[in-house]
Image (tube, rainbow, N blue to C red; front, side, top):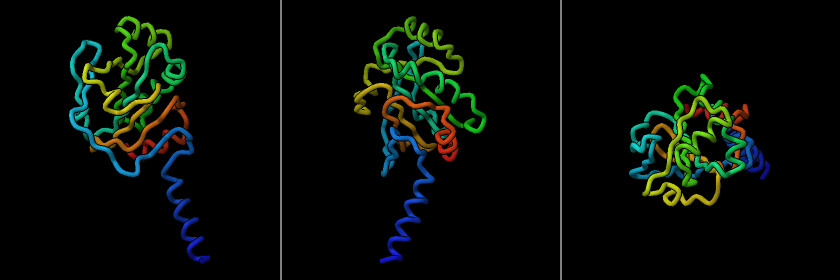
Length: 169
């Protein structure tokens, strides 16, 4: 019995090191694979997620009317410039039906410099991913598989998050 308790303690500590101590991040027990994930850039051209295999990809779903999105966007912008995450692609995807001008005003107001604006397409990713609220962030590994989600806002400059994410970079 004691041996079992020690084993469980050691195993739980080993697994805890893999996950940052962030309450709203969920690590998938099984990797999720999707087909035909695409969204639009600011010129209304299609961006296909499959073109980014070999990189860690963050899809961040937001809207201009979303207060928590406004709070987290500057730290998401700063995440793009962290050198140890040089294999990271970040796509902030507006799903609030906002036009480009309104989205640009949102980025300008927050002084967003490292990120581009993307939009959900008519075959909505919001439905495909069954999004329940904003912001929601989905993280894909280098093989293009979803391995984690963040529900709600996050300070992307959190050191434990950056360290954890760098393990996948």
